[in-house]
Length: 68
Image (cartoon, rainbow, N blue to C red):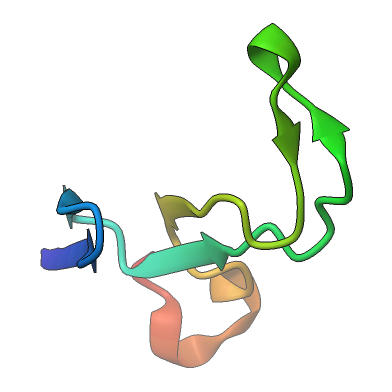
């Protein structure tokens, strides 16, 4: 099991994640370019973050990760 915590110091917002998965995908919003959201919000580069727990993507081909 692992724990992760992200904190935005300026606003005080935080997110904590606990998972038994061995991998974590981290998306930064690099490709956002004036994407329209709810109520007319516009999202630009790095406007958000996404964390997805999962097994390692190559676990079926990697001898080290055969238990994934």
